[in-house]
Image (cartoon, rainbow, N blue to C red; front, side, top):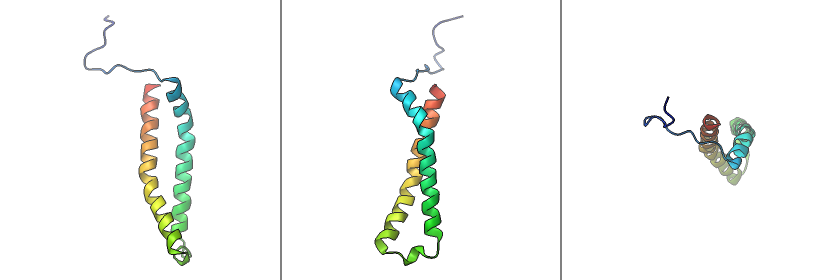
Length: 85
């Protein structure tokens, strides 16, 4: 048995203290983002939404659009850290 890792397999790094704390906090962050996304999508789907001011409509729609990539990044980071733990 060799103690040298296979050249084809990457070295597995342990989580740093900060990474472990981030991993612990990510599920709550993801849940909060999903909740915000669902709330804003429900608001935008209501008939009263388009009776709001143009600024409010733009703000809500822009936030909905921004939440997708933000959620994707958080989930990808959670997966990355979870695989290393």
